[in-house]
Length: 371
Ligand SMILES: [Cu+2]
Image 1 (cartoon, rainbow, N blue to C red):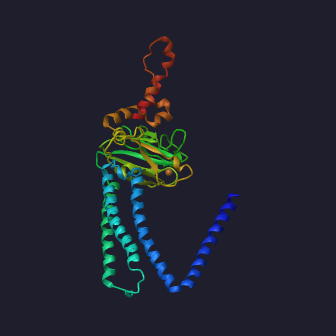
Image 2: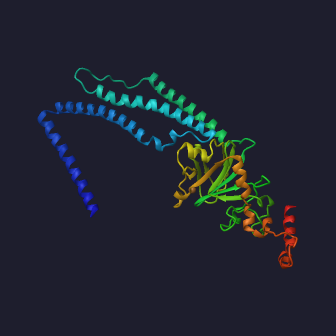
Image 3: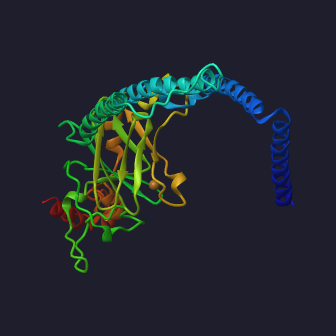
């Protein structure tokens, strides 16, 4: 029903436009073609100026209405993001000035120099000097912007400072997995065929496997694996080693003004220094629910919208406290290897004697692994 209604409205609008065009044709014949055209020119010239003024008011009004919803009003929460903001502002100022001048000139000229009996249009097909000016000036401006951009890009994606924390970020359909290197400071090896969604989401080499020729890597035994929330420290550089388990995702960090693709099989890196803790941001934004969000900035499948990750920026003391509570993922997969699950070797009573009899054997296994 609604389809026929829409169709009827479209046909009606078409008929009205057709009739108006017909009517103006008859008017033109009655008044004389020339006079009608001149009148139309005047009306069009007026509309040009009206459109220019209404457009400028509209731009101002939209800005007033929506500027709070953009990130422009909030300072970058990372040191590197300040450089991105600088580039954004320089680009906005340059293009803004050019936009206002060219658009104002376009509409004003259309009004001011409309057809008149008092003057004749000057035939002006070519001018080498002007061609050179409007080629060279934008070329210089763009080169400067690109060079500044490249310098920043190489800095963010290049070597991180020596004291930087390292966190591995892996995108998957649909979520984020984070890995910390653990006590040894080394990320253990992983292999995609070792992935087990139940207890080895990254495919860490925790055991020998003859059928896929994987060797157990002790460096993977203390790696800490978390999902959805990543902890970093205020004022401490953090290097993200980014990858993906399936399709191309993208680590989008709008508050830090950074983003980087997560590509399967090709690790990418990015480093930044957070300036404010999550708690400080809650206060400065007057938003109790404030979170630093990781959004996936690539359309990666039908659950793309649900790929929200969270970055908790905390102080060093809070981070140490959090880290102390984390257990290596290896122990979750093999609880029998977890030293905290092993009961004291000395029997406390006769009744517990039988239960603890096995302990020295388990302890020996742990000891052997550490060697
Ligand atoms: Cu994604």
